[in-house]
Amino acid sequence: MDLGAALADHLEFLGELGVPGLSEDPAWRERPGERTAQAGGTAAGSQDEGAEVASNTAGAELEAVRLELGEDCDRCKLHRLGRRQVVFGVGNPEARLMFVGEAPGRDEDEQGIPFVGRAGQLLTKMIEAMGYRRDEVYIANVIKCRPPENRNPQPDEVFACEPFLFRQVEAIRPAVIVALGTFAAQALLKTQDSISRLRGRVFKYGGARLIPTFHPAYLLRSPERKRDAWEDLKRAKALLEQDGDPSSET
Ligand code: SF4
Image (cartoon, rainbow, N blue to C red; front, side, top):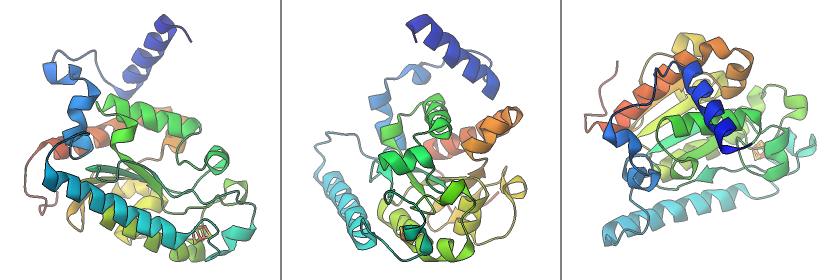
C-alpha cells in the first residue's frame, strides 16, 4: 500500500470511529516515544534507578509466570485439541494500559503472538488511534491456547487458564485494563453479564480501573459499534491521563 492509500485508509478508519478530524491539540502530535510515560509506564532508557528496578521486577515476575505456565502446558484439554503453541502475551511488562482478549485464533496460534490476525490489526489501529504504540501496552488473552474451530472457550478451560492471566495482571500492575469482549470481561469481573450490559461503565479491578468493550472480531462483523468502542477507549485514555483516585467507580 503506498503512502496516500495508507493515509486514506487511516482517515477512513478514524471516520468509522467517529473522530471528526485531525486534532489541533499539540499533545496529539507528540512522537509516540514521548507517550511512553502515559501508556507504557517509565520511558524506555530512563536513568531512574528506582524505575529500572521496578521494570526489572515486573519483567522478572512476568517471566516467572511464563515459566510456570510452560511451553507445553497440559492443564486443560486444549493442549490435545490442535493447538500449535501456548500464546502467553506480548508487550511492555510495565505497561499502564493492558488489553485482555479471549483466546488465540489461527494466526495467533501460528505466530505465538496475541492479536496478529484481522482482529489484531484492528486492535493495533485502535491503540494507535489512542495515541499509543502497540509495544507500549501489554496484550494477553484469558485462554492461552487456540480452541478448535475458534469455538468459544469452555468453563473448564477458563477455570484452568485464567489464574495465569490474573498473575500476569499482578506482575504488570496496569493502571487501566481494557477487557475485550464478553469472555475477558466475565473472567475478570466474575460476572455472567454480557458485554453489551457491561460496556459503557468503569469497574475496579484491584488497584486498576477496568473498562469492558467490544472484541475487535465483533467490531469487524458489526462496524456500526466501532463508535461505542471508541468511546470506551477514549474513557481509558482519559483515566490514564488523570492523576485521580483509582478507587472511585462510575
Ligand atoms: S489453555 Fe491454558 S490451561 Fe489450557 S493447555 Fe493452554 S495454557 Fe494450559
